[in-house]
Amino acid sequence: MKSALFVFAITGMLAGCGVVQAADEFRPPNVIFILADDLGYGDLGCYGQKQIQTPHLDRMAAEGMRFTRGYAGSTVCAPSRCALMTGLHMGHATIRGNGFVPLRPEDVTVAEMLKASGYSTGLVGKWGLGEAKTSGVPGRQGFDYFYGYLNQVHAHNYYPDFLWRDEDKVPLDNVQKGGVASKKVAYSHDLFTAEALAFLKEHQAQPFFLYLAYTIPHANNEAGRAGPHGMEVPSLEPYADKPWPEPQKAHAAMITRLDRDVGRLFDALRDLKLDEETIVFFSSDNGPHMEGGADPAFFNSSGGLRGTKRALYEGGIRVPFIVRWPGKIKAGQVSDVPVAFWDFLPTTVELAGGEMRAVLDGRSLVPLLLGRKEDEPLADRYLYWEFFEGGFQQAAVRGRWKAVRPKRNGPLELYDLDADAAEKHDVAANHPKIVRDFEDYMAKARTNSKDWPVGDGKAK
Image 1: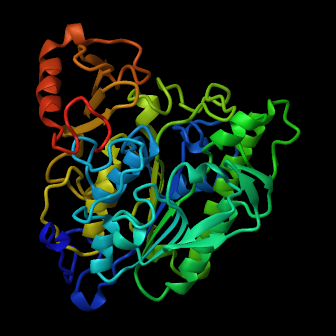
Image 2: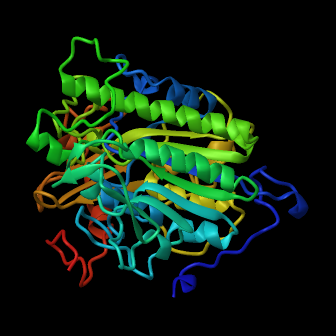
């Protein structure tokens, strides 16, 4: 049973973290995680973007902590979201590829952990971790409420003819065939924003966890194959008059629309007097895509990093990562400590006042966020990724060093990210001991089982 994997008890205080002082004062913070889809490291103004307007996310960074080395769980969506939900990296996670593999009954999610702590839990947007009637649907993985897409292919279409509400299909007025809409009435991103705002109002009286998994700026791949481009957005404003190719206008308009609605969310928190009671995380599930007519080079979407979506170089896995909690997280901080999606679960468990005993790959970021001394420096640990599409690849990070194995049984490449964030210079020959240390770690970092035999990237 899932409860056998974790012991989770509400405590009267968060020992040493300074959030509360006594049991009768304890009110754990609301938790919101806003996830963009295929948003690159360089797509926001606060990460160096010069052409796309993102004032609300830039303000979020100015009012909180911006990480320069925040890492997604994977370089594609489903495994990345699995790492976020379960606290496990790709060597141990159930879902390691982008197929339709469901979470298992024994998998434990952050939603389950927070629900056990008395939180209301809601998911709005894209799930990707279980089809209808499987063990992976949100309602069987800790979410009280779900509205959105179950699988990532359905999520390509911004004008779908239905969305899911819990385990029921909700018809929409759009008309589509094969993922391409011929009648466009309801834009899914706008529906998600409305649902998220309604969730805040409905659950303002008790601690809540909202996972707001937007699909912007992912392309509609099917529309891109059938027409001029797949960057679906109701309006090209404020870029309609720019002398840019239309797919790039639409790509920029999507990101600015996302930014606008993040601003609406923060406005709602202030109006509901929840701003100082709510910690908000923002990130992206992987690096920028090259689909539906999008051109990552046009806006420097990788921020000068090597690679894009589907690569284990920095451009494929290093993403915007911002955390804001007024009155608790000091404003205007910039951290270069490497952190990853699997850190989210232990972080929120600690913030909720819980005690967790389990083998996880993640570490709580609470000391870092709140300015406490860390028992073990986060920068000294290893982070690990693997990816199977087009052949088995591995990557790992420790501090300034990054090791990449671009093909099975091939030699490791080594990069000094402090001196060479763009990974232009392989220095493996100059540092044989560091390479051996990475080899030893990566040989032990993954679990092989009947579901994940060596050499096969697809669950049976």
